[in-house]
Image (cartoon, rainbow, N blue to C red; front, top):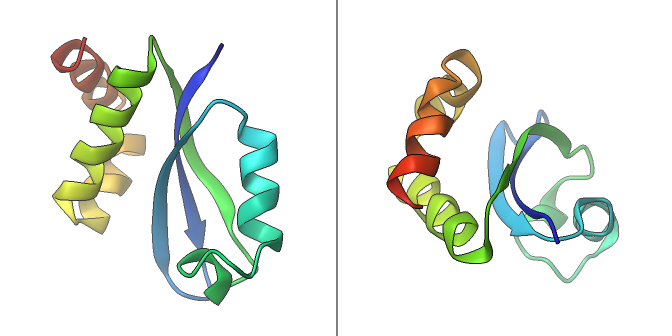
Length: 94
């Protein structure tokens, strides 16, 4: 089973959404088509900004929480610029 941390981006809102899933395709469709999700329902242009696999659910949820707690667009954008940040997060949350 894949444990995936993903970050979506909306140009319309200029915001990021950080999440965890084991089935990315299904989860992305949920974000694009579900009016019940209060955060992602505000836009219909969500695109994948970044995703990466984790070794287990605990690691993935810990990394997701870490990224959310940073509350920083710059930090999220640096995850793309500096891939070693992801490696360090994976090591930290083994």
